Length: 360
Image 1 (cartoon, rainbow, N blue to C red):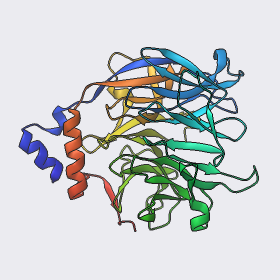
Image 2 (cartoon, rainbow, N blue to C red; image 1 turned 135 degrees about the vertical axis):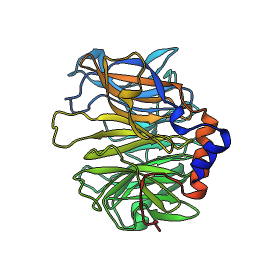
Image 3 (cartoon, one colour; image 1 turned 60 degrees about the horizontal axis):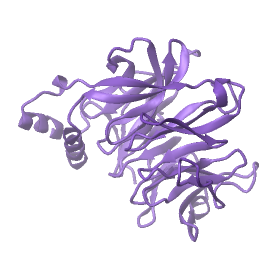
């Protein structure tokens, strides 16, 4: 009702807004069959893209981290895997020796700072707070860690008695991840909330500044064999997979509530998946169908989306694995999507989507 009311008030229909994207080739990313496959891992609101790829383009070469933008191209970060970048340009991730790091200067004039309390960092917010994982050694169970500073560290696994991971953190300090194979959201003030009260296997992967969480769960309520993408907010869990694929996973969400990820059919073993975008107006759409003048591309994964609607991921360009940046060229004004998201949050309006009983 809220979304319909908004469209009525502005005098247009949802179908009159068609999303289209211009694609920019980030470059070849060989090495899909290596121990450390190449991938794109994130984008910030300045359009800085991070990922990792083999040095020199050879799949058997050393896999290094990189930062890329349209003005400067690639910068080699060395033998590191960057997992997250904030709007200040600070990068975090892990090195091959099981040590987390923070890079405050992407030109590497200053060396990365090692973070002793983590073996891997997956999320960083505007204040430099980290979400990540700690393990005593390779045989020890992983422990979800929240690091606000060197003297203020919370071990969620010890606190709640479950092995787990912390994957993302927003500017309010809310953290998402998995504990005991169940997705959660945690905040220092409100404590722990599990995403699904039915205790299905799930992963909470990304959180935006409004506290909306996305990830994937084992949808035992249906006949699906694989995982289904979900969006969660304030106790309301909604499965958003409406492309009838056997498996989908949500990897990113921006401030307007646009969600990106990948979906695939499990019986097609050669399928690398198809990238998608979901919002409350259009539902889930294949990104391939939204490209303008780019028939040579097959987009496999959408790994991140910023607040400008730019999307990054990996795909095949003429059969070769490449990274890509999508920039919207015809879409609802960002204020409109934000207004729709806020109305839906207030009134719980997710038209045509499968709802699940509220969480804790």
